[in-house]
Every structure is written in structure tokens, then in C-alpha cells.
Image 1 (cartoon, rainbow, N blue to C red):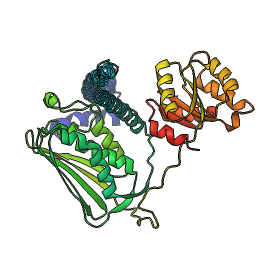
Image 2: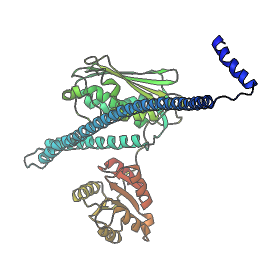
Image 3: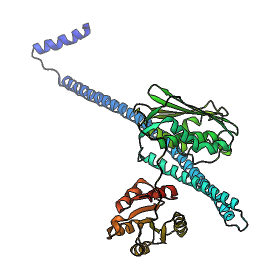
Image 4: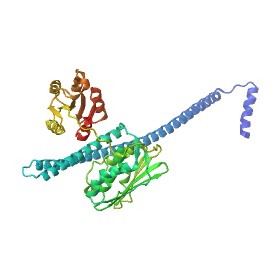
Length: 449
């Protein structure tokens, strides 16, 4: 303590000891000092709290700005993705229209040749073959659309069964062979000599492999090389399809399995397609628990697709199976009622069935179909679903409720081919559901009962 402080306190202390009172002015000053001190402490606390609140607010604002920036970037990315999806959808619809129109030209021209007065029998037969090929092409396009829809919605069910690799590859090569031979490609197939058997849906695996072979043929210049190899590695069956074609750019490779995706820079060299084949192949392989990968060293360097299927459910070859197929039973003559508001569809199908020896009558709306059922007493009724007056579902229900309805074979013939459509048909009383265009061989099998 300084001498000055000591000197100042000693008189005060002495004054207090002597009973002297502190001057009022000094007491007032002391009270003011204490009040001021309290005010300053309070203000200091308020400023400290205000500063902390300000810092918290600034931190929250920074966080909000960062969140808004992320949200803005995410929204811009989503909008860009939507624009790209919309563009690809428009391109797909344009491609679909193109692919469906393409077969119509040869069908129309072949029909004109077939009925031309001067056409020879050979020309007529050739025109019929053209129509058959083009209808099959259109049917495959529509089947692919239905399949990719089922895969996307998770409603496609595999029919798993003992499968031999060689037979699956043979089926795939047979399907792709016309495209391969049409461009004079050389196809080499290398598979293990010992039988490779596993559990799979053979139809779907063959569909994937034929898709890969057809793509290889389309995107390879004439007289190219296509190589299919298969091997067993650890717990997988590995199938590779390689070609000497135009290849895939590094930018396109990550998107090659996207829906509606095609190699746009090579459109002039391809032979059409909807851009869903590889997406469908990926979906089918993944349903098997497998994986499909694409590889390419770049444009002009060819490409290779690798399919991996699990061997976890290996099965032994079925015993006692005869090498020769059982002879299909002969088709018996049936009384058949066809109801379809598309007259050409009804009459052409009736003509085919009459050639097989069936007795057929046709009608073109629901109420007349019910009248014909009572008069004609058919054994089989082929009903379109979207008919005027009464739908095919309504007609089927009423036929089933009649006295003779229990013995009737009801077959739905319709363009509606989703699983829900098949369920509705069976709920209405149909025995079978066939999607247009009807496969005559499939229909003939159903008439053998």
C-alpha cells in the first residue's frame, strides 16, 4: 500500500475512533461510486451476453448460408437430372415411334405383293415370310418394354430351374444369329468341355446373352469379330462377350446401363433399338444375384461385357430324361367362339383356326358374344377385353355363371399384358391369358386338352 493511501486512511480511521462522522458529501460520493460500479458490472454482463448471442447468430447464419448453398446446388443438380431424364424420355418416345414404324413399311409392301394379281407363288411365300419376321420383331420390342417395366417395379418373377450353360448359350446364339450373319461377322464360342450346371431362369439368361450378342453385331462394322467365352471361377459362372466394334467412350461407359441410353455418337452406325436392352440385361442378372459389367479401351477399340452368375445352387443333371422330345398330341377339332371388336384381328385368327380344322364363329361386342355363347355352345371362347357393350371380364363372368360355363375353356386375348391384367383375367374366370399378337403355336398348345 502506498504512503498516500496510508495517509488518507489514517485520518479517517482516527476520525472514526474519535467518533467523528464522515462528511455527507463523501458518503454520497461513495454511494455513487458503488452504484456506478454495479451499473458497469451489469452493462458488462449485458454486453458479454449480447456478444455471445451475436456470435451464435453469426454461426447460425453461416450454417444457414452453407445449408442454402448445398440445397441450391442439390436443387440445381436435381433440375439438371430431370431435364436430362426428360430429354432422354423424349428421345426414347421418338425412337419407339421410329422402331414401331419401321416394320410397318415392309408389312404393308409385303401385303400388297401377296395380293398382287401377277405375283408368283414364290413371291407370295416370300412376302408371307417378311410379314412373319416383322411381326415377330414388333412383338419382341413390346416384350422388352413390358419386361423393363416389370424389372423397374420389382414385379418380374424368375422361373428358376436346373440349367445347363451350353444349352443357354446355344439358345442365345440362335436368336442373335440372323443379325450376326447379316453383317458377315465371325462368331467364336469357347465354353468348358465338361457340363456346367446351375440354377437359373434359362429363358432370361439366354435373353441377356442374345441381347449382348445382338448389340455386339449392331455396333461392329461388317466382317468383324465377336467372341463369347464362358468359364467357372470360384463360386461364379463367368460369361464374356467381346467384339472388335466401335467401342465405348470413357464418358459414356458409366451410363451404358442407364434406361434409354444409347451410344449417341454412333447412331448412324447402329441398327436401331429402344435403348433399354442393357438396362433390362442388368436388371435380369441382378435378379439372379449376379452382376454385369461393361469395359472398353475407348472409341474404335471394341467393347467387352462380363456377366457373373452365382454357382451357389449347383444341381446335378436330371436323370432319366429322354433325348427325344415327346410327340405333341394331335390337335382335336374344337368349337371356338372369338369375340373381338377388331374385325381384322378376329377374322384372321378365325381363318387360322379353321385351317387347323376347328369350327369357329366370330362376334365383335360383348352382348352379341353372350348370345352366340348360348346358341353356338362353344368349347373354347377367345375374348378380347376392351369390347363395346360389355368388357371381356364381364362376358367371362356371365359365361362362367351359366349352366354350361364350368366346362368352358376361357382364354383372354388382349393387348394388356401386365401382371395385374393377368390377375384380373383369372379373377374374372379366364383359364389363360394371351397377349397380342398371339403366338399361334402357344394357342395351339392350349387347344390340346
